[in-house]
Length: 327
Ligand SMILES: [Zn+2]
Image (cartoon, rainbow, N blue to C red; front, side, top):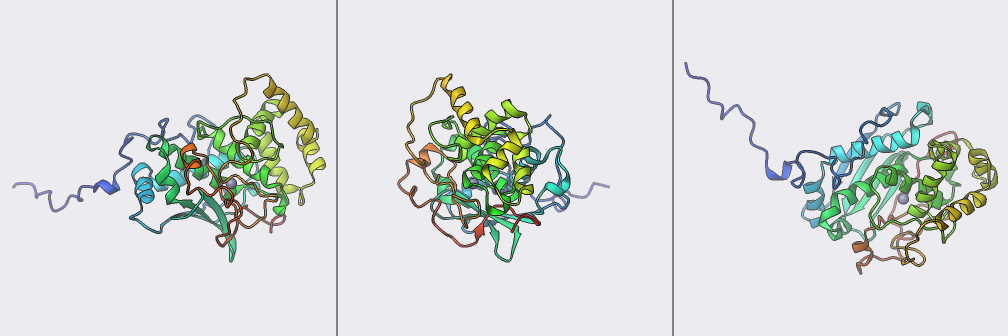
């Protein structure tokens, strides 16, 4: 009795489009792939209810969508971004501190700018991250995977962070998002510490400030700040920073500036705002577009610096929001 032919019972060989990232099939944790799960770090932090993660691709034929599918496992990337954010913002905190985000949908579509996050009008516990396929197609192929992961982590922070019922400075909200990106080792190579601005200039400038605060006030200081934004109801600068760090933010920033003075400072190339980096005045503005900051993209003519941050694309601003303090 010969064994039954296997050709009819075996599953079909996977097609190339379904294969793992071609440039790194063995692992998602290489230098280019960005290890957003940080093995060996604190135990995984889980929300009381796991969020549904979804992917929507508006145009499969776009080069950016093809690149995304080629370099990333979408389910792994989203899952990993959630784990990274929850670990960095909620380790050692009670589960009730974690926003009740119910779903996150990544929408890949053609648009100017880089990415933004919104909550659905009907229920802000459902988030949408919009990521530009035009942007993806402009990023250097050598680091496109890391860049996409970095942008995803940044945007994912907005799906899970607190914002003092929308009263927190937009620069702080963006700084926390880039601090998480930084801690996940997903900061782009051109990021620089910069004290020649206000503390709430946002993005990596505030992100590096938060990183410095960790050294001065303990490694859980950003978790304290985020938790403070849940508890405070309304953000009041003096009170808030005294409560978190025992000092005014002006003094803290001054200390940070002094610490930078001891370092070699790179020539300041980015006068004013960088592409897409126009942090909200308040975290409750309805929309926010993010630069991730790829230098190649920054110089692209399509990148409409002035528009980013002000262009509205429907949907409400992303910042997470949970009762009783959130809207
Ligand atoms: Zn952001």
